[in-house]
Image (cartoon, rainbow, N blue to C red; front, side, top):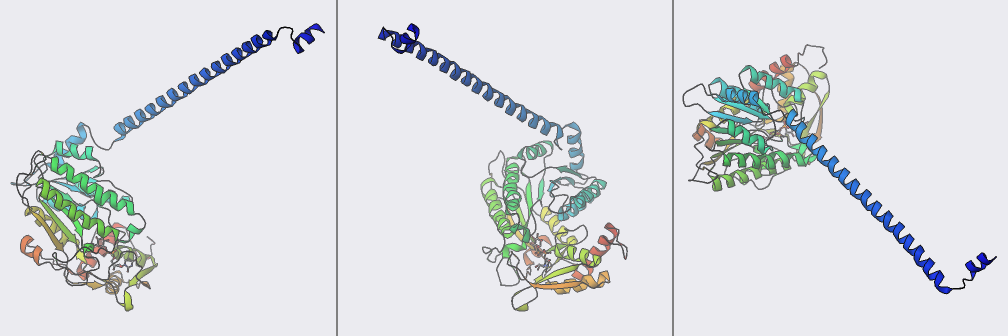
Amino acid sequence: MRVLEDELFPSTPGKVKIERAHTINRQFHRCFASTSTMFLWALFLVALTASYLSFQSFVDTSSRYFTASWGGLQWEKQVRASAQIRRPEGFSVLVTGAAGFVGSHVSVVLRKRGDGVVGLDNFNSYYDPSLKKARKARLAEHGVFVVEGDVNDSRLLAKLFDVVAFTHVMHLAAQAGVRYAIENPASYVHSNIAGLVTLLEACKSADPQPAIVWASSSSVYGLNDKVPFSESDQTDRPASLYAATKKAGEEITHTYNHIYGLAITGLRFFTVYGPWGRPDMAYFSFTRNILQGKPITVYRGKDRMDLARDFTYIDDIVKGCVASLDTSGKSTGSGGKKRGPAPYRIYNLGNTQPVTVPTLVSILEKHLKRKAKKNVVEMPGNGDVPFTHANISLARRDLGYKPSTDLQTGLKKFVKWYVSYYGYQRGKNL
Ligand SMILES: O=C(O)[C@H]1O[C@H](OP(=O)(O)OP(=O)(O)OC[C@H]2O[C@@H](n3ccc(=O)[nH]c3=O)[C@H](O)[C@@H]2O)[C@H](O)[C@@H](O)[C@@H]1O
């Protein structure tokens, strides 16, 4: 009873205070203890996360180191052997996009005449990479080694220039295709802008600086309607992001020529076709579909106008590329500094005989001995231009460029290659 009374009505009021103070103290300690425990836990978690992250980055770095497709003594030996020059006054050429259509052809021709050639290609999957691997195998038969890597990899480029004093760079690596830019715009910026700048940075710092020949495109003429297209014509109205990145490439290379003394030649290719070509292009996909009995889509311009292209055969383009290397002149910079003016050139490489898309189809039908199932639709507004037509007088004058294969002959050679490459037999579904 007393206890209860004492508890309910304490005789000494201070007692409550003391007890309350004790309780508060205890609570404070408990609270402090739990805060510091929490703090310790938090510290522990932070430390755990940090060590996990650094472990991850260690794993990443080391796995990159161990799985990198380039580097090492054996790799350097292959690069050196491939770059070896076997003719007097020969070149050592770094060919980017070497497993690509134009790149593989140029590499073979250069190697055959005794130049040293090292290829570089990222083997991306824009179109069937097995075709790129097959081109690589063909290059290996000719003694050309293709490094697997990206032009955006500045460490790789520095290493390549460290191992070989390239006299020339044939820059053909790019995100190609006019209409695909709608689907994947970033890939054009990545390869055609960022990749180009990374490559030019490597070239500018290289000692000696190489001369550069690179692939621009007929698409830079965009909405121009003055024909034939001449190099001095207006090129500031591109119709696709692809064209815009190629035009930007022309401006970017000009800057590097101006500031660092790099010798630059830009080649505006006009719809290149032929054996070992690109499956995304019309002549290639039409062939596949006609052989498989599938329909093809033929675009038509405004007022039912047929679209036309200045289709250019691969062997003619290769001759233009090689002549550009032969006449490129020298870069003048060293130690990353310009020492004098260097050549800056741009040339059209076309065939000068535009052919309509329906005519292209009828030539294919003749060579394939099959009728196409045509689905004619109005050209969608996705970057296409209605026609292209090259004026090649500049290239003829400076490069001795003289295309000699008409579309009939060129497509016959393409169909022959296609049929043998894909092992086509009548009746067999490819
Ligand atoms: O000359 C160039 O600079 C460009 O040439 C080609 O671009 P393009 O001329 O559009 O070549 P294709 O894609 O083979 O088209 C050829 C023609 O066939 C037409 N086409 C294409 C595809 C299709 O399904 N149907 C069709 O009618 C196109 O509209 C175009 O008129 C290349 O794809 C580009 O990489 C290159 O830069």
